[in-house]
Length: 184
Image 1: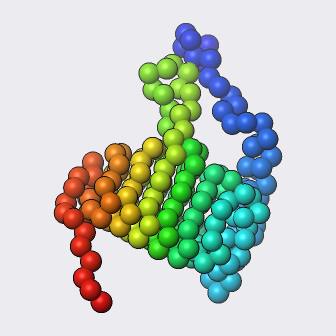
Image 2: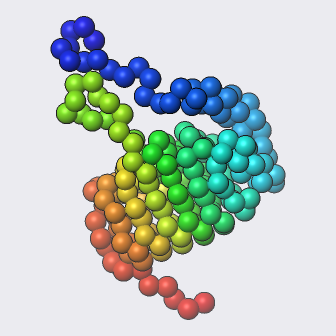
């Protein structure tokens, strides 16, 4: 950093209390998290609750899901987090009820201020409504709000808010159509 003028760099971007909590969470993720059998689906929500998450016990979380900060997480009932989902919830994350995050979805709540030479961490909350389906491999950026009933297409890159009951797809994600449900 000596070569770059003005590049001080914040070596400790998180509150001090968070460092031991992050260490303990990493140990749980390495040792206990992968061992929780699918049949014992309440074990993962219980582990998250031990670390301050507000999570319903009726949540299906695959063993390969990665959660950065459980104490900044809120998940409603009947939510499924598929294989390989990453919740990089630095600014907080709220997920409504009856929502599905398919395999390899990445929810990102943090970035860096690239105009500042020290690249300080910038965090923003992400909100995902109820009855939302986020398809495989989608990326949800910092500060995004996804309205109730929305569908995010596979591999979509969502950097702006998504209106309720709409379908978006592409990179960047664009409106495709309104989502209308058929009667059962």
